Length: 261
Image (cartoon, rainbow, N blue to C red; front, side, top):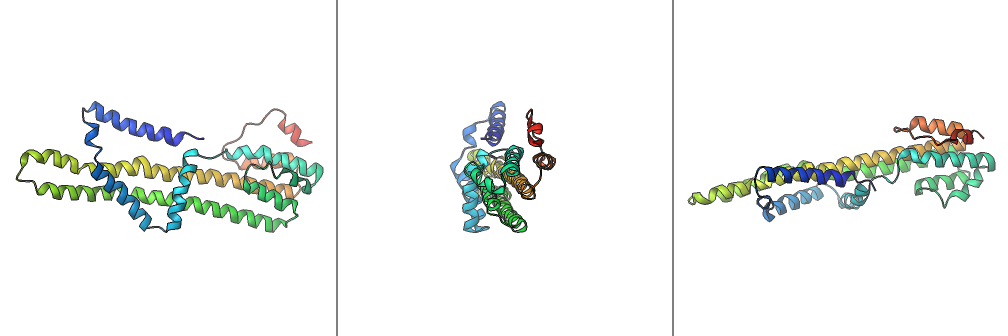
């Protein structure tokens, strides 16, 4: 599990509460049910209204993956693919069927099965590219949903403030209550800005990053499987994949010598 999101959100809200304490303000003055219900509820509502239900369900189900983060780094798949190349070189492509149960993910497992079945190289690459594109699209849709919430939230906060100020104007005959009422009115704007910049936009940004990492890993798998199918030497497969990965993996001692055999 990658804790970056939880750490970041805790630090952000911690900074907010620290500032409130330093300024001598009351935290309870900012936690008002009315403005919070309006901002959070209405933001989610208009977000759903601007998307399809399928998009909404996809976005909600992506939250678990967003918190957990990427399962592995893209470079972690390189030793696995080099192992497949070594096995294919010594025992033939059909032997890769024995590796199906140990495949690190369904995408790799599907590619191995097609490779062992003797699927044409062009057809196999087309299928892998289509699956890669579908995964990228799902990631963009989920990220766009939360990015949309981040765009709506500040404006809805202003709407809440206007509603509250309208109520304040009805109390002009009671000057002693105007100060607290005006302060409460601006809580809606605060929560609109907070939710956008402390929650919705970070969620969207993290989903985009996870999709990019997943896309890079799938690209490495596709390139590796294609190289294996073309009969590439394990050492060349490794060097080709390491040249493509954005964060260079550390080589284990003896890996290059083993790959050359």
